[in-house]
Structures are given as structure tokens and as C-alpha cells.
Image (cartoon, rainbow, N blue to C red):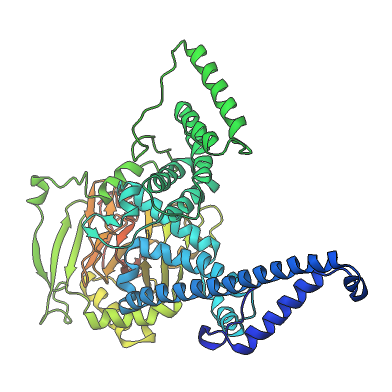
Length: 550
């Protein structure tokens, strides 16, 4: 039995009394099975009622204690979340810039608020339930929480971060109070486990076990962690360690449903392998499981290692000879009237293929206006399925995007005209200005901007994507580089600047060197906008060359 909460979380006297009466009546109905006449004819039975009354008093005290405990829990929640929301609402984008904060927000709204709702629903609480019902439609769901967990794992892989650093909020160049508890780490591990991703399951379950062994309090039991961890380690092919972990589980819970059978199976399997390889038993390593203990499984991306190395700033092929060929200059768009009085600053980022950066291209006011127009329309970014031609979401592109027309606002039209003046290419056949926001773990894995033959049907009219003009609309604290694995370049976001490159040779053939990627955002929020300029209308602005690769 639980209490009625009045407005503001206070217990109303009327609610308290009505619940007490209902509680006492229900217990009396359950306990008193004899009729009134039978009671008075049996002192023995009356004596029994004395003990029944004592039991009722005890039950009443437990009921009161439960009500007080519930109220204390709700009050504790309110105090914790009040302090948390004061911090988060002071700078929402800055707060969500830390991937752990973003993950825990997803987890709170999907899991923990639901637990609080269940607690309150033990007793009618119309105000709270009504509020929950109104706002629930905007809450993240299970898929969102899973996606946020996978984003942390993606960051962990790309930037080679161990689980302990993540759990303590220690990211490169950043230290914050955004920590992961034992239960958070366990949930991360379980998310990977349920996806048959035993590599990450081991890393996070091991971290949960370590924090629990270090004395941190948790809801999850050590037996549950060892259960998941031992099987995940077995799946990674480490039988000696799987046996050692399962023995720990059996020692804690000898009657565990699976542990005994698993232990016998693991031991038999190990003995069989040792006999076949004619080897002696080697005890498991006493070193804790950490990043690098097991090899990360290969995936669909052939250039995964070089791509992720570039994201970390490693393997960049910027030699002194190449650097000597890079210059900065004022660019007037071949004496374009719009740029004669105020040419733009142009810097070479790479020599071949030629990539340039334009400085101070977007003002802070223009950036805020573009974001303001885009925010209400942001939706999960899509890619075109190469087999069907249908737009669909994909795990290798994790961002939200919106498309803005020039007619919508003078700022959009001004940006379009500026791009045309700088590049010397018409934007009449270009795509709309695409605005994208990359949040926690947001990325776009290596891809081509141009379409490879056979062309998609939508390119028959305006041709292929000739060039890309990419505007950086925010600084990023860590991560978020644009990298080109084929020739080892990394371009880092700088607010207000833009980069430009051609995707096609003058012949119209695709320049396969321009395969590029948007690295996962480690800390911060990355805002970009881009203009894809098409072939049609450029015949005299960028005429064909004499060879296929001019």
C-alpha cells in the first residue's frame, strides 16, 4: 500500500485517512475468517485476534514506513533532478556536448523516469501521470537509448579510449563530472551483449565489475555482471578467463541456473583444445581486461584503421614538400563584382586533389539564423540505397539534417549567391542548402559525394555532383574532423570557415580520391551546412579538359 500525493508532492490528509481505512479494512477482511458469534464463544480464537491485531499494527507501521520511504525517494529524485536541470538548462548545447551527458539524458528519460512513473503509479497521482502523458510522446525510446550507447562505443573505438576513462568522464583535453556508474556500465555492456557485440560487452561489463569491486554501490548484483561477462569472454575465445570468471560466479551463487553447466562445458572444451594442440594448461592472465586485450572484430569498412587514425590526427600525409606548395591569398572570384571591394581569404588545405578553405565566410548572425531555420525541421539524415535508389537511414551516417530554400530567408539566398561568386559555378542547378547537426558520436563514414555509374534517376536532369562547398558553423572541442583516407588529409572544423573541392574531373569522371568522412564528434556539437553543385550549367564555367583526369 502507498500514499496519495497531493499537488506539489505533499500527502493530503484526506488521501492519507482514506487509504488507511481502506488498508485496515482490507487486512481485516483477509485475516478475520470467523463469524461474530464464533469469536465470542472461543477465548482461544479471541486470543488469536490479539496476535492478529499486533500483526495489523506491524502492517500499519510497514505501510506508513512504505509511504514515508516512497515520499523520501520522490523527494530525493526531485532534489537530484532539480540540481541537474539547473546545470543542463544553463547551457543546453554545452551540456549535451559531452557524450556521457547525452547518453545519460537518453537513459534517464527512457529508463529512469519510467521507473519513477511506476513508483508514483502505485498510488493515483493524476497531476504527475497527466504531465508524463503529455510529455512522453517527446521522450526517447529504447532504440534511442541503444543508439546513444552505441555512440559511446563508436567514440571508444575511433579515439581508442578505455572504458575506465569514459566512466570517469576523462576525455582528451576534457575532464568533467559526467561519470558512469556501475549500473550505467552494466547497461552499456548489456546493450552490446544483446547485439551479439561481445567485444564491447566485455569492455563495459569488466568496467562495471571493477567499479563494483572498488566498493561502489549498485542495483545490479555481482552475480549478474559475472554471468554476462563470463559468457562474453567465452565468445571472444578466451576459455581460461571464462572459466575463472564462471568459478567466481559459482562461488557467489552455487545454485545459479546456468553457471554450473557452463563451467563444466568450458572446462571440457578447454581440455579438448589442449589435447588437440598438445599443449599444457596455462592459467588466465591476471591482468585486467582492457582496451587491447582482445582484437576488435573486422567490419564492412576496408579503410577502417586509416580512417580512424586520421580522426585521431595520426597518419596525416602532410610532408614538408607538400606544405611548401600550399599558399594563402585573397580571392576575388576572377574579379566578380560581389568580391572586388571585399575579397575573401583563401587558404590551401591540400594540393592534389586541390582543397581550399575560405575564412570568415559566415558571420555569427548568419549562422544563428540558419540554425534557427533548420532546427524545427531536423530529421535523421538519409542516404540513397545503391540497389533500390530509395532514401533510407544508415548506421554509417548518424546526424540530423534539414534542407533550406533560398526563398525562405534573405540569409539563405545571400549564402547561395556568395557560394556562386566564390566558386564561379552556377547554383541554379545545385541542391538546396543542407544543414546538419552531429551530436553524440555523430559521424558519416567514408563515402563519395558523387554518384557512381549507373547514375541515380534523379541525376539525369542536372547531372552528377560536380563539387562540394562545406560550411563549418561551429567549433568542435574534440573530434569531428573531415578526413580523406585515400591521401591522408584531415581538415578540422573552424566556425565561420568553409572548404571547397571538386568531386569530378573536368571529363565528368568521378575523382575517387575524394572519398571522405565526417569523424565522430567526441566532445561538442558540430553544425555544418553544405551545397552540392551539379554539372548542368557549368559547361562554360568549367569546360572539359583534354584527358580523362584533367
